[in-house]
Amino acid sequence: MSSLPILHRLLFLLALQAPQAQGATVKTPGTQQCYELNLIREITNELDKLPVASEDSLNSNEKRRLMKTSLRRPNLEEFLTFATNSLGEDSKITKNLKEIQPILPTAMSTEEPILTEKDNLGDFRVKLKEYLSAIRDSLNCKNT
Image 1 (cartoon, rainbow, N blue to C red):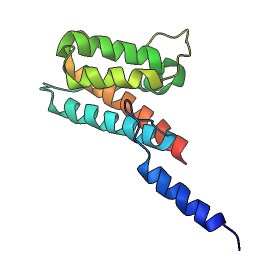
Image 2: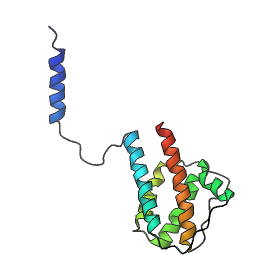
Image 3: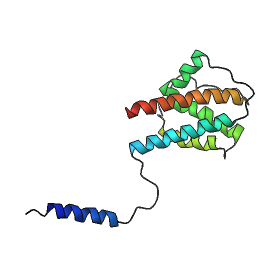
Image 4: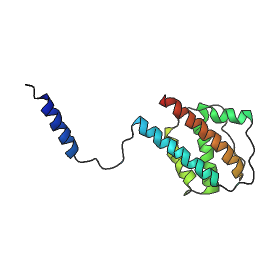
């Protein structure tokens, strides 16, 4: 008779009794992706709350620049600067954009990042929503 089933049970019981690790949680690729998607959802919800007089639609060149992978980091820097200056360091949008920063590729591009009109929350909101949509779509693609 094999003692293998008993060893499995003992290992299982030991695992249940092992002390839990303290500190930061370990994010597996699946949970990391869920975390990133939640950050994007939170930013989008906060953007919808901004008091905006009017919103213009994006032209095709702006849309292309927002979706370009090599411009993801420079575009984020632009949005982060605008959010910090207009909404403050403590705004949920600013904090969540900072959380997204480490996940983006650092590839450099010779193209200029997207520009947001100074003090124009409508322009900021439209462009940031499109940008977040592109990131969300790329995260969904990684999942399939």
